[in-house]
Image (cartoon, rainbow, N blue to C red; front, side, top):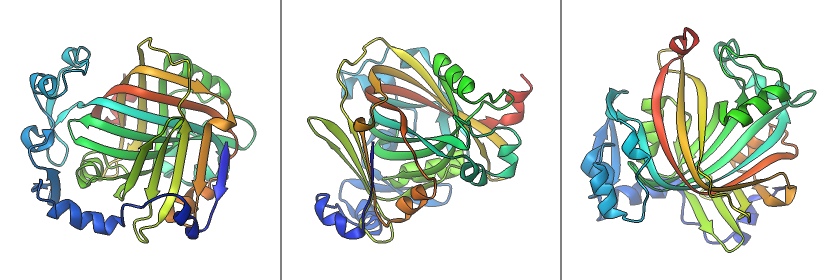
Length: 334
């Protein structure tokens, strides 16, 4: 794994930049193929005639099948959506039909990770200690090519924790989560590149989302995500992951859950279930290139004191269902 610290001048060598995030705000609202709706008091630009514009998170699967006939919808047909109020009317779960992701799990300074978690959350979960004074963080880049929210890109930086109410036995807990394919974490940062994704995530899930450009590129050998610094318009973080060979096509179901605090100060948890259709993993440092600059997200990542890559995952084809948060107390009483 190569972690590079670069100055903002390095943006010249990282390819074309699509523009500052504040410029994107204007462009998103003024595009002739966009329309504006109100979500919980926020003016949100949408793709005019897109899935969200027409169906507000509840498109008939027959419509999805007509628009994307190559997409396997068999799993979604087994799931039932429920109307919910999450600060605005929506439906749970939210469906993600065609997606790709790369994930790198790094070691990080354990004491520093604890300091980043609210005390209320720490009473229920702790960062997993993989070895003395080293915890784990997961950096995941998502390309949601086709979903109920149209399409967007997202970068998630999370602390890996034990399950609330469960034991924390360090490597053994991590091994148990890996075997069960059920992972728990606390989300630190979550930039997205559409206002729709930002507002839904902040209002509905109380997640630390902000709007900025995220450039996604697929090459012959790798996937690359460039996060643009919202304030400067320059390249902030570049996350590149190898397109691994020997992909498995055995369907794998994976659950990713998070513990959080809602806007009222109550502990909540949320989760997504992913149906992985094509995937591979590696423990090689050479599979990941992470380039950090002087941007705000880069500076934050540097404070984590990232170490070696514990695991890298390349998942070029997966589907997902994201469920709205619930009170953590309800889960602890089960």
